[in-house]
Length: 59
Image (cartoon, rainbow, N blue to C red; front, side, top):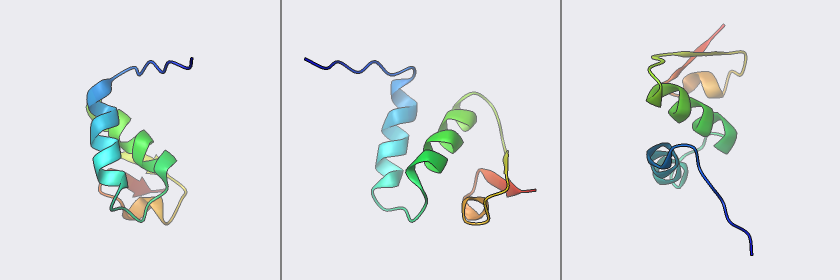
């Protein structure tokens, strides 16, 4: 039996809801939602595609 334990269930719930209709990479969405949950307003990235998402800023 495999059991998953998540650090923050609300982050996972928001991530899953948004991921269903998103064009962004799942890993980027999870990073963005986790950072936002813990008070980060912006996540800096080198990824041009990710930078178009509301929580990312291109460096």
